Image: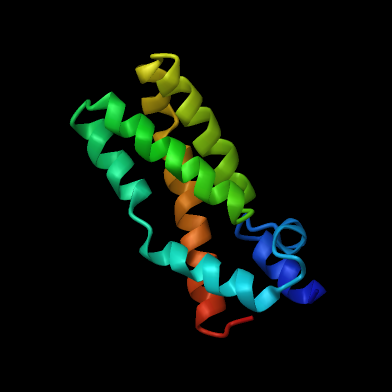
Length: 122
């Protein structure tokens, strides 16, 4: 595993060592799967559902986002998506609403890191 890459990705909340355990050390596989996240709509779906106060759909999107981010070792996004999903599951809609800035920040940071990686910046 490339320690420099791991260090760079960590700045964006992406845990490469954890991902390598999941991917059996296949960095190319991880990159291919991680970059697919750039087309993932769960965050956008979550925001739209929260704006519409459609909490069932918001829960589905948050829960899916939690799973995707966990599987891809997006550590910070996973942490916030987990808390958001749990709040919605418990019917704590205001708490989920209050977590939206943190979820956005974690999501945006992952996107920023993936774009930089895709463009060969590291």
